[in-house]
Image 1 (tube, helix red, strand yellow):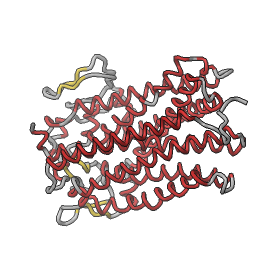
Image 2: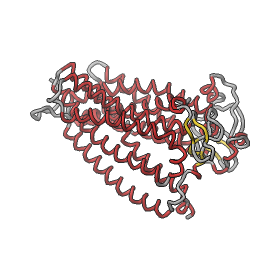
Image 3: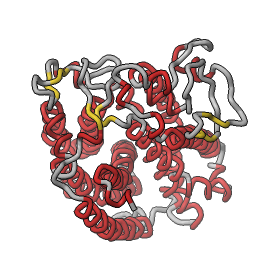
Image 4: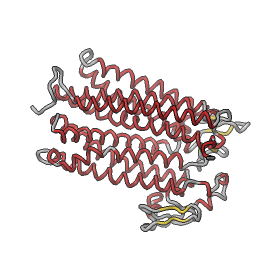
Length: 467
């Protein structure tokens, strides 16, 4: 098959598979970092040994997840210098600073204070231990900031010009590059989605104990913490999602058109579901609410947006071949993300209502406990398809020619790969990655399963039960 000899395609699959796997653990570490810190705050105030046992459980889960997340993150950085060598040369002047800052200011902060959480409970003061818990979470959020600064620049390469020989982007204004028009919305949208994931995992663990009738104190308290974090982060996420959509409509018109399956210049409506006929350039949708997407992007119901056919005739988008764009794929991933958000909000509302009703009514509602048990699948799917929409949606560019970027500062994906990497080498590494990553995933799942099975046990081996 041609695809198995296509170096561009295989390079994209290799990196996509690596980052999708990595993004299993990033949401868990950042999201559960907040749950961990909140729980330690509870213990600092209550001095209840059951709360200390709960913190110890979250520290063990966080550490196992953090370790495998670091390992898979390093693999991605190696990919920059191998399959994506030309890309690395083009963005090197821009990416060097945020990637170095991520290691120096975020990773070491997170790692040092995680050591305190692992080994310092009886060796440092309670206040220092509490501060350490929050600094672990802050470190993880700072790590995400620097990575997303780099990614946001790929979406909107401002603060740079093209070198005289046309081979690389040269930074002219670090702050303009780092805090470009898409950085804030990009960061907020991503991080609050990760916090939603952590909240739902906390609720799932709590629901598992409720179903089993174990660790009832931990289950009740954790369900409330997860429900509060879930409803708050879901609500804030909606604001950043709107900001991100507005930024895409302004800076990335071709991605915006693909998200709505729009080939013709028109006022875009909103189709909750449908199918894009890429061959004929048509969207088939049984429901299409007129003007809704226009309103979300501009605040008016009658703003026209150019479709893919018109955009492909204009610079700098004339390098784009409309017939080769994955329009239906992007339409589906974007709308799956929207549907998943609806499910996330519904679960959050149910959890917050029935967790705080008199007597903790959720403890007697098996159907809601089972929903909470499987609920992390909703933010997980939303995060993965949201990433696909953002990254695949800017094709055929790996560095997108955004509206506010300087002329010429963009890079086609086909020009970003290494000329010295063969399809055979890529297939071999894909096979190796699959085997190694499956072993790591199974090992991680077994370790986490054992931690949860053991539960939050107080010093002396006492189970976490009501007083």
